[in-house]
Image 1: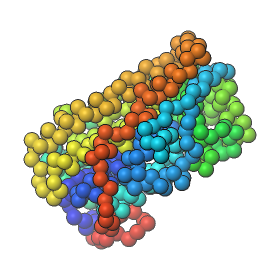
Image 2 (image 1 turned 60 degrees about the vertical axis):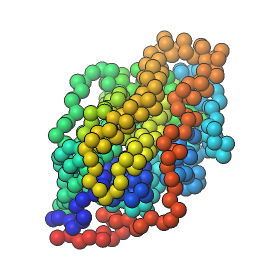
Image 3 (image 1 turned 90 degrees about the vertical axis):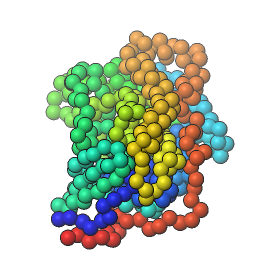
Image 4 (image 1 turned 90 degrees about the horizontal axis):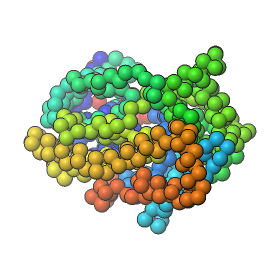
Length: 434
């Protein structure tokens, strides 16, 4: 079965997480015709630390979801604690320059992603959900995408001069250029996350966990729900599962976290887990954006930092805004772009991306390696007990207070955008199946 839909778009975006939906909002507002493809139904839980740094709040206001986020999110995050065994060091988080919103917040991805996706619909993007990019062929200037409905046999054939890869990091796009497979190793990191209600953990802070072969974090997000997340080495995970035959990986990890960290035991005292543990991986930190790319990459598709700094959402939002300012400035909508212009945009975007985000990746990698090695993390804890302000400075270096440089070039529309088309189940499709 095929669906009748205009086949040509100014941009095709694969993935409707924070990066993809942000790009869809900004491009659609600028008059671009946008197809946004997402294979999962929303709302959905996702492995994520769920912290939104204060540096992103002005951008979220510009995107039109700031007010809703403030209603749904947890308390302002004003302090950070590093937990190692039975010890803890706490410091204040640096305040952002925006006096109205100096502190970050935490909100579950099931809520954040839905807010952004609805705003993309409102801006005029064509949302295909739940659909998957089944086959993508071409190069910059001439992309062809066959999209397939996840729950039916419906298919669409789309074409666009611009392809934006925002699908995340767990699988490659179905293009002619698959990612080189990574060999299995004991040092591979797998990410786990669970939510709990009834936690005695006090709101307003972020807890970072330093563990033997793992690192993690805790935060109270909207509705006083505790998010507990960690990244654990493959060899450590295998030993935990071997010591707990019959237990799920998540249950084995939770039991270990309780044993190894007094802060986790206290946070889970009397708490009840909501739903199962989620897991994914192995994670693949590193830079993937390149000036030679044929497609544009944002979010984790462009580069991934160790999650210990909680910068995943920041990098998703800010990389999307950065790319869109380049695209909107150089490419008018509804026109065939010059290949040389596309190439120049790619080069400038890749250079700006590295300047803005590469230092965060290096800092996160250094902190992650420190946290996972007990002798080194013990030395760090000793230093922090004397100079707790190092935690504050580390958060500042990690990008928690600097707004996106692209923010100054983002305009909030003064008029209501056109009604969006959507293939989801919440509204009737304006085209018909044949």
